[in-house]
Amino acid sequence: MKYFNELKKSMEFLDKSKKTLFIGQAVEVPGTAMSNTLKNVKKSKRIELPVAEEMQMGMTIGMLMSGYVPISIYPRWNFLLLAMNQLVNHLDKLSTMTDNKYKSKAIIRTSIGSERPLHPQYQHIGDYSSQIKKMCKNINVVRLSNPNQILKEYKKAFNRKDGVSTILVEYGDYYNEK
Image (cartoon, rainbow, N blue to C red; front, top):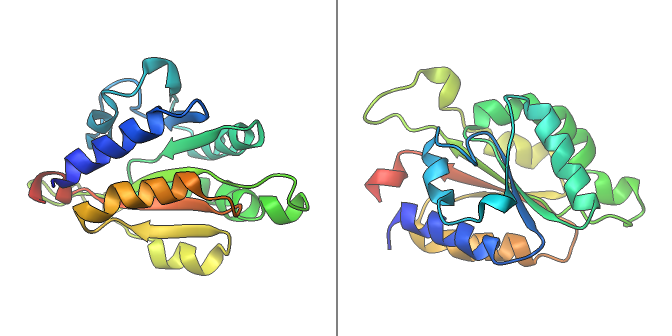
């Protein structure tokens, strides 16, 4: 069981549902290690976006309000920081603000950037998992440290019925190490 293969398998599982859409940077074109996990995902389900992280999270919320389960991909935690307004003030509180009319089930993929074999510098290797857990009561944050937990956690995030979104945190170094 390899880390990268389990991520790829998880994306293929999510692709099978008519309700899922994949949104973000480098989802339709190569550009990050995450891009390679989407190679077998239907192109018609991938929405490539420019570098506009807050807009992406706003689109993610709009998609889930339209009945989709968006898989919103931010290649690094450091990039997801630019969407904090939408994440903390809107996605986390959507069910409460709408008297449970909308369940905020989105799947957010992000990563702690890899440091090996080349260190990308400190603006790419942040891990804000514990801080987001403290700020967001309706968002589950899961660090994917072991390959055997990856598919199980993606399935759990997809099958939730409780109005809780999930941020799945990958480790960039593990793509080639585990």
